[in-house]
Each structure stands twice: as structure tokens, then as C-alpha cells.
Length: 232
Ligand code: SAM
Image 1 (cartoon, rainbow, N blue to C red):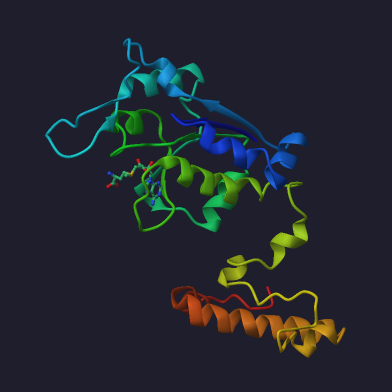
Image 2: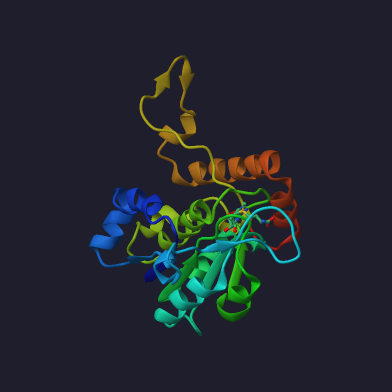
């Protein structure tokens, strides 16, 4: 997957993509990441990318010209262009799966109060929010989305790791344990050491239901209404 990020602050991304799983995905050529600093496309002598809002109000708005020019330069017309914004539709695991099937994604990391609506009307295919809160910039929201998407691309992580994760079948993940067996007086549930895979699966399914009910009653109710079985 080819990922292009339009940003005024490419440095924000570089640490993430140079470590651990993302850097391995790049080495294996499963993803490529390109940064496009759209300030370069601002033609006035100060390379100004923002201006005051028409109609008054607080803050600054990203100007259309540098963004139009940057997007035209990568032929973004008719490509999947994502604008992370709190006023977008909610970004979910299902959306991450859908986007992980694309060959190319373009992200526009917003800043200040947002960007000129004409950029959205001309290029943006998906306005997506990562949650009901307001961040100071689109760089972090872009990273959250890319992180959720690229790990679903075949070959990035082992397929088994994705099988029983949170949101698979609409439920949250069961509790996880590793060695040592006992730590500060707390023992690992004995069922996990029993070697009885059917019983372990049953225990995990019960825990998934309990956890979903306790932490996400909305998901639990949806699951109960659906015809899905906890067994997958
Ligand atoms: N004026 C905007 C509003 O009220 O909807 C908020 C702008 S916010 C201060 C600056 C930038 O951060 C946005 O343009 C967007 O790119 C990003 N951002 C903030 N919160 C976000 C969220 N929940 N999801 C996705 N992007 C977000």
C-alpha cells in the first residue's frame, strides 16, 4: 500500500515509521510512506498556509491554494483521500479493514481550526473522526488511522494475531496472561494451564462477553441483538 501524508510537520511521523512493526512493513515493501509538506506549494514569500476565517470567528484556516497544488501534484483526483476531522464519521475497525484493501491512501493532516471547505469538496472521499474529542492537530489522528489500517494488510503481522482481537465479532478481547504463573500473590487462572483447548476457548468466550458487558454496553447490546455466536 502506498501512503502519502500531506502535512506541515513530517517530523511527527518519522519516529513511528522507523521503529518496530511499521519499519519492518516498509522493509518488506508491504507499505511505502511519503510525506508531502504542502508549505512548499505556498507561493508567497513567507510560504503562508493559513488565513483568517471568512465570516469572522477565532483561529486560522488552512488556505486552499497550497493544498490544491499539493494534491494536484500527486494526481489525488479520483484517489482515496482521507481527512481526519472531529466532524467526520466515526473511524472504526470495520473502516480500517475496508481501507486496508486499498492500494493507495492519501491523508491530509489538518491544523489550526481546520481547512478551507473547497479542499474537502474537491478531493476528500472520507472525512473521519477518531473519537468525540478535539485534538490540536491532524497529525496524531492520521497516525492513529494509519496504525489501525496498515497492520491489517496481509503479511504485516501473523493472521492468528488478528483472529480473536477486540471488535472481532463485535466483542472485546479476553484477559491475557504470561509467565510467571504467580506474581505478587496473583495466580494465572488454572484453566489456562490445563491444556484443554476446548475449555480454554469456552473460558475466553465467557470473559469476552463479561468484559464487553462491563466496558462497552453498546457493543454488548448490539452483539446480543445480532445472530452472531461468541464462538465466531
Ligand atoms: N475546528 C474544528 C472543529 O471544531 O471540528 C477542530 C479543529 S482541531 C483544533 C485541528 C485539527 O485536528 C483538525 O482539522 C483535524 O485535522 C484534527 N482533529 C482534531 N480532533 C480530531 C478527531 N477527533 N478526529 C480526527 N481528527 C481530529
